[in-house]
Image (cartoon, rainbow, N blue to C red; front, side):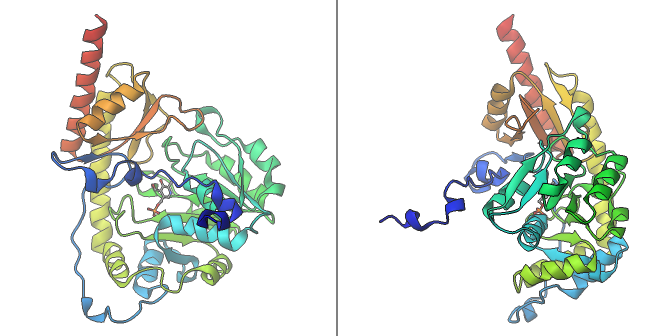
Length: 364
Ligand SMILES: Cc1ncc(COP(=O)(O)O)c(C=O)c1O
């Protein structure tokens, strides 16, 4: 009898999330330095110091220095903040704590971040889809119509991969309609690149905001994220979280990143990334048949080209890695690039330019 015959029924047909690092492994890129523009990471990292003398002890479940500094950063009470292994663990905790396996469902609005559906399916939770409508805005009537059937609505703002922000009036309508029925989870992984945030909606007991240090703070390798919500929601999540979700070095580094000088550095780096993004945007829209798609409220750009596969192959050949988004609904032939350093962006643009020049020469 194969060991596979005893795997849980709902796990048998699961397909793991095709993360950027699973598709192209960093450890396998010998030779020329790879350019990573496929995971919406910050292009540069910062230095932190570690005091290893206390690492013989287990860390606190919710390290006070981290919780206090994130509460200060957001202007919330400490009781409204939960820290976890990335925002991805926040998604998982919400699903585990609020959904009954084999019975309940979550609602997502594709094209959007893939982990909401993957996380739900991992716990035998159903996934209802209400695709984004015109200009990738929420299809409010269809979301509202399904609220009796779901426990949780995920709204990604800015949305990955379209870079769009939902209309605040639409978010308000969904929140009002979800009262007493479902949680409204607003994923703000890219909020530092946008001009607005959802913290004001936290006056409602059923609204949750997800945050991360993986993007603007340049700490994707740290795995540290935050769930912001009413204290009753946070208390509920604390019932299902692991006893030591953050290792001591993670907590130490997160506290430094969230100090006033850490936040200052982050803001300067965000300004630089946004300035670099404008340069790519300007050049990109003049290249080949490239058509920009969505908006750019995050640190990434989505575009469409009928040469999607050939362009992707050309970039991979030169060790420049971007992300194919064409399997998502409404995103046929779409590729997404994260904004890198000036040098990385210049390399990307020159390769794209070279690609289209060759295409034109071949066709002539
Ligand atoms: C919209 C969105 N939410 C959450 C995450 C995951 O964040 P973390 O690295 O904190 O798990 C990502 C990562 O790409 C994302 O794009």
